[in-house]
Length: 370
Ligand SMILES: NC(=O)c1ccc[n+]([C@@H]2O[C@H](COP(=O)([O-])OP(=O)(O)OC[C@H]3O[C@@H](n4cnc5c(N)ncnc54)[C@H](OP(=O)(O)O)[C@@H]3O)[C@@H](O)[C@H]2O)c1
Image: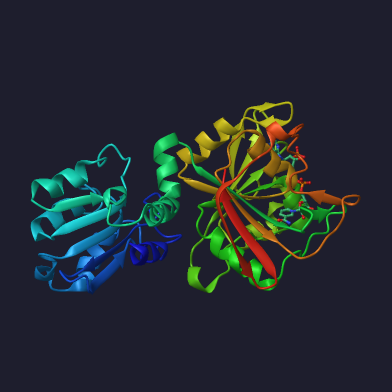
């Protein structure tokens, strides 16, 4: 299952709205036979890829299959994996996460059982310690988190990414913020960006930083993301032609959220979406529903502080990616990434779960779930 999880990650950036899924097939003696992953929307599912890599399908009889998500029961863009496996008669199939898609939920497992295959949900594998089961289940949920969140809540998955100092500052009030973290952390952040359909920024970040917000990483060449700018008055639209956002992507991939009824000029042909605004704040529920309707299943909010604060305060953040450099700016002239949170007491604190960290170059990369 650990290897299947590693395989699944390889589809990052290429499968939305489908889940990232990995699969491993081992023989009767649990020796490795084959592995595969869902590499592209419309392409083979992980199980089909593992079968293709195996070559001789007759070897599946009596084998053990490990897959990070329940095999699909239905014919979609590709045939049903549960039916394909059922015909090939492996000895057992172990999957980590049940697929909440009503077309699948438990039905993939039923098809296999009906064909005489022993089926385990990973939490039924009592031959593993509870600790190992928990670790693998968490990792499998994390792998499919965008897909699972979309199905469970009908909203896009929201992550926040911040580059900060040790004391939580993300810029100086003068606007200076380049660069807080080192080159290795910035490259790593591009690989994280590739996980999400779109990057969200506020209008100030576009005006001050003129960022490109594209994916510049050797593992993700050719993946073009969308950008969403929170710009109630449409103030960046007249000058969009000169912005780096437009140099690296087509205008329709730039989605500008403006306040309902705002008179705008849109000379470049960006995608403009109107949203209700109350006391200067967009109705985020409405914004999320609207961008989901135009095919955005996941967002990474990259700033600045005003935009990040709005998402946290509205309870719309699922994951935080935090890069922390070993430097301190102090509070007098700097802008903290949490400056718009408005927490008044301990009870109101934002707490994260299932967190992990690693060193990237000279910086710390920390991620956790809200
Ligand atoms: N270190 C990092 O990771 C990082 C990342 C990004 C940015 N930054 C820095 O952060 C600074 C900018 O931060 P900031 O807080 O001033 O600005 P910001 O978040 O980039 O933009 C704030 C503006 O965006 C619009 N906006 C954002 N959320 C909104 C919402 N929920 N509803 C309605 N409008 C919304 C409003 O536009 P209007 O004013 O037009 O109404 C608001 O004034 C820059 O210096 C930049 O360099 C740092």
